[in-house]
Length: 257
Image (cartoon, rainbow, N blue to C red):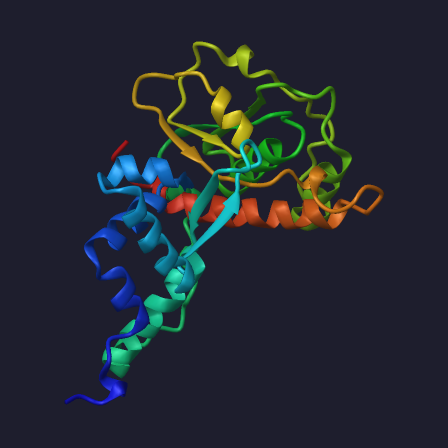
């Protein structure tokens, strides 16, 4: 009998199961609800929920209650944890496979990027989607055309969103104004990314080869108790979105649309 030290690393045991691997690959594309995963993988809900629980317990997947329907949860692949687990798996097999980098996104130079168009959508177009628009434009040096809009846009950008981008990333969007999603009717986009659970339900069809993704990101303005300083929540949101943007860049380099 082999010793416990010869057991397969946790990542291999988790990701090596065919259904769990399928769930991971679907979540690598977009945040999804259980019923959507059930449809995509063609397996019963109780079986999908069981394997999702194992992936959550293993730290590869996280879940967050939908802000649109609290009975639903959105599942998200934790790419940073996956990268760390993969690095540990290689080292467990042989020291020559040890890698120092444990982040999932190697630098992508803007010149490597083909011309793409991306639309970010949230409800008010006052915080999450303009933050994503600005960060994608910044990370790609404008090579990717980034636009944002709201299903029910507010009159002005949230001042904490403006402040967080300026202080954390040196980006100034103070002159920008929220845009209504209807103003983009007929426009073609390579990617349409919703950042708000409610706005996802309101998205129209864009047709063609548009890839629709969802990032389930809570509204920073709704974070915490009334009267509490909300600015730290906006910083966390901007940091989360920036991580998602950096993870999107290698996807944008692929020719397959």
